[in-house]
Image (cartoon, rainbow, N blue to C red; front, side, top):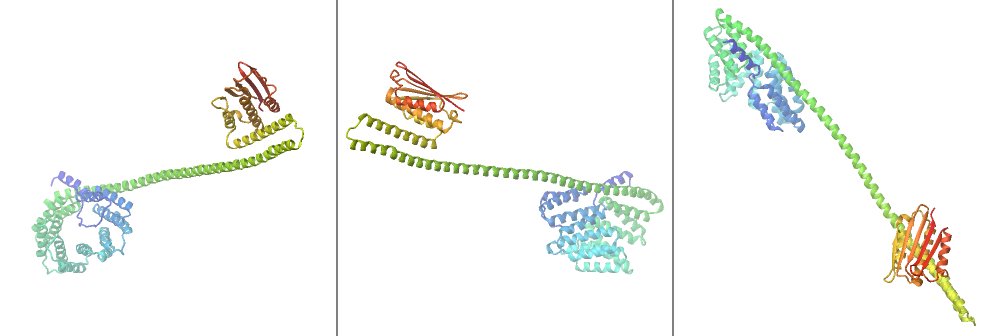
Length: 564
């Protein structure tokens, strides 16, 4: 064989799968495409990609809390590590799988048996045969599938053969052959192992018929791994009996090893040819064998390193993802905390608004009630004053008319006018009291002035705004109300004005009221009671009043009141 072909074979074998029994793991992946993609990579011999996809599928199972799926992926990953010679790594992953398996659940016994079998295979490869046999027994204990149990028994018998416990191995093979009903690949494997084992125990036994039968079944079914085994045992058998036959089968084995791209079987085939070929022919084989062995050792080391890198990157990605998840979790927690605080603040604001609304409503209801109460009190007080002033006054006048022989007409009229004025004052007080309880003072003034407006008398108001009355005492407001009332009554009774203008102006420390009408301004006003009453009230407030009366222009009155 050419050296270039050897290196080409080496590259193939470095990433290829050794013989691996088909294992049916029943599972329902969370992401079935990931799991099936891993199996496709496995079938193509791309073990690194298969490992990565099994690992990704496992993470999805973990997120979904699917223990069965996690265990299935870990077992497949462990088998993959065994295929590349990382037996310690395979043991590690297989033992991790037990964390997700329940021995009390009979539906999981099949997976448990598969996992023990995988650990047993890895342990046997590490030459810990006694431990491997103990683990195979555990696998047999949990086996529920006949074909799988047969596989485990074969594996156990192989280990017994390797430690030269031939009789124990032979009993297993005899039992398996007796129970086998079909001549399939499994039967061919058991028959071949039975022949080679009995041959070691019973030298009178001729293994060729059984070895040939096993070979024929494997060739018919195109089972290359089985053919490799049959050719090996036939070459070993003929080695001491017919060297030509031994060399023939050794070469057949070499050809099959090339097709399998199995570096392990290829090296063993080289070693067998070197041992069987004549010295002249084997010299070239030795050189090629050494080159291949060195290259394979390097490839095996590279393959292990490659898988170590794959596992490291996978773990690193998990750590990075975990850190990212933690970071996102912290951010989400912070956002949620902010939302909680915002909600709490919103609730407090809402409660404050509701509380304010309730308080305002209660205050309005209370003020309304108090105003109603004050109105009742004012009405009661007014009625009492009416009784005291008007009723008593009228009674006095009536008595005087009844019992006084000579009646002074002017005196009676003066008393009646006095009662009128006093009753009017009572009416003003009641009106002010009632209105001020319900309206702001600018509204009270507007209401007063507008009450004198009619079809014959137009009243115009300028500058009467709520702000101009700010800071003014109740007593001053009451006096202004009465002054305006006196003026408006006089306007209707005396001046016969058709238009009246009342202007309000407030400056820094002075409050000005201008009254102007187009009535009979030329009439004498100094003697009127309204003027006397008005002057008295203005002087009491510390202000002054100026009258301007012209027959053509009507009456103008300017009132100035100091504001503190």
